[in-house]
Structures are given as C-alpha cells and as structure tokens.
Image 1 (cartoon, rainbow, N blue to C red):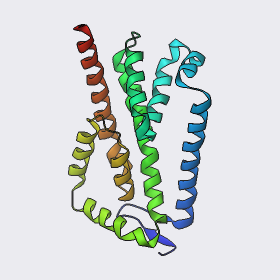
Image 2 (image 1 turned 90 degrees about the vertical axis):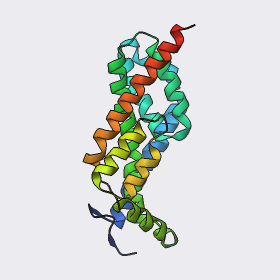
Image 3 (image 1 turned 30 degrees about the horizontal axis):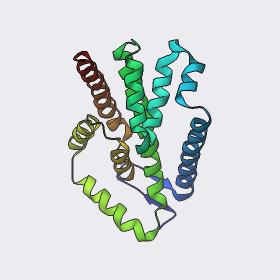
Image 4 (image 1 turned 60 degrees about the horizontal axis):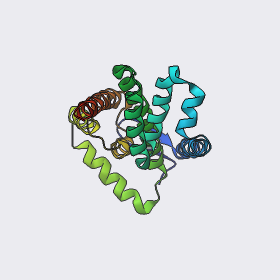
Length: 197
C-alpha cells in the first residue's frame, strides 16, 4: 500500500494521519466505556438533575450509537424518561443528535481505518467502494434515510459510508431526520400501547 492513498473520489489521507485519528477515536470509546462502568446512567441522572435530562439523553444516545449492545439500554431509558413528562419533540431532537454523533464515530473510524487495512483485506475494501460508486448520491441519501427509520443501530451503514468516504455533509441530514422521526413515532406508539392498559 502506498504512503498516501486516495480512499475515495472525495478525499485522501496519509497513512500516518489515518492511524493517529483511528487511535484517538478508539481511545475515546474505551475511556467513555470506563467512565460508564464507574458512573451508571442512574447516577449520572442524579448528578445532572431532572432539569438537565436532555443533556443526559444526548449522552445516552451517543452511547447507544457507539455500540450495538447498548441499543436496548438506550430505548428503554428513553421510554422511562419520556414517561417522566418531558417534551417529546425536544427529547427526540436531543436523542437523534446524540445518535448522529455516535454514528459519526464509526464513520470516522471506518474512513481513517480503511487506509490502514492489511493487504489481505484490501480486496474487500475495494469491492465495497466499487459497490457504493455504482449508485448516485441521491440514491445513497435515500437509503441512509430509510435505514435510519429502523430501530437497528446505524453503525453498519456508517461504516460502509466511512469506508467509501461518502461526504459527511450529505449524510448528516438524512441520518438525523430518520432517527428523529423514528424516536418520535416509537415513543408515541409506546404511549398509545400503554394507554390501553
């Protein structure tokens, strides 16, 4: 692999810079996980207070966006907070913004990490890029929006977009709109179901 590789039609990074960014992001994820081990969500809410619940939701959404394993924790905590009587629009906005930031971590890790791929995996990365380049940006934007309307973690699509170095400015709006609508509808459906009991 050359010292400077074009990872897409949009940008290029030097190998050394890509490794530095990758390790900084990985270090952030590890430190965040250690912090959460010592300060569980209930204790964080107690420290923040009820008035700052939106900041807590934002941080909790970032956690939910960083790991596939924390998605259940995120949605159950979101419902618990929603039943506390907070404004659902603001709750959805802060939660979707937090999820976006969590997804951007995976995006940047994939974008910079694709520069550092061992030669035996280069073929997979190049096939993934070729697959993405078959579709127009509009089609990809629609796929991002449709995928973000599902309760599945957006990690997978963020990784694919990062490897292909899809422009970040084109992916932010469909990701945040899709997650905003998903969260708002999810909470409303839970409230509707709860009203029957």
